[in-house]
Amino acid sequence: MKMIPRVALSVILTMTLVLAAQAAEPEPTTDFYVPPGTNMSAVTADYFTTLVFREPPAIVDPKLRAVTSLTSLVFPVLTGLAICHSLANFPPGGVNPPHSHPRGTETFFVTEGVITVGLVDTNNKLYLKELKKGDLFVFPKGLVHFQINLSKKNAIAFVSFSSSSPGTQSLPLTLFGSGIPDIVHTTAFKVDNQVVDKLQAAMGK
Ligand SMILES: *[C@@H]1O[C@H](CO)[C@@H](O)[C@H](O)[C@H]1NC(C)=O
Ligand SMILES: CC(=O)N[C@H]1CO[C@H](CO)[C@@H](O)[C@@H]1O
Image (cartoon, rainbow, N blue to C red; front, side):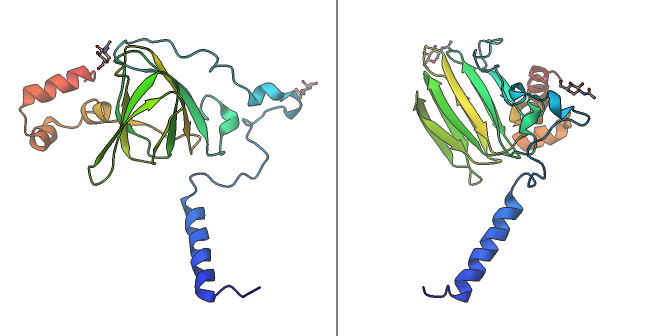
């Protein structure tokens, strides 16, 4: 076997270090996480099991998608494992407004119906795609994206994240529900105070 050239070796080594540095969560030092004070003899298969995805989440607002999120906060066994899931139910016309996940890449798998998804990159290029049952779309970590059901039938998606706690920043809420001073918005959006007040009111501010 030929020796691997030194340059190639150092490239491989650098890439390995970069990938390690990019890992969102630290290497586990135990088989799996249990909350402090847990009696290990009392831990059963149920600790690794969830039944909450048996039923799609109930629609609350017919204009929005409903979601059941299974992050490590609600499913502690995922803690430190760099993965979590959610199940989303889109009524006809239901939207998941533009948002991003600062700590995780998302894969979005349609299990029922048709869902239109959109992704915007840092060059402000929009990628739009109509997904049918069985189709999967990738939303790279941190990038703004949205989904909408433009069909007349319900649609469901099974969602995975490369983090046990990917976090969500919803643009409408971040911009108009956080208390950013009006002057910032009137300048940024070139609109008057009434427009800003209306948008803030819609976000409960
Ligand atoms: C731990 O759990 C086992 C099995 O359920 C039980 O028999 C034992 O009494 C528990 N120990 C403590 C200290 O609670
Ligand atoms: C309830 C609702 O808004 N349904 C709409 C879903 O999308 C289709 C296609 O754009 C519309 O025709 C429906 O009115």
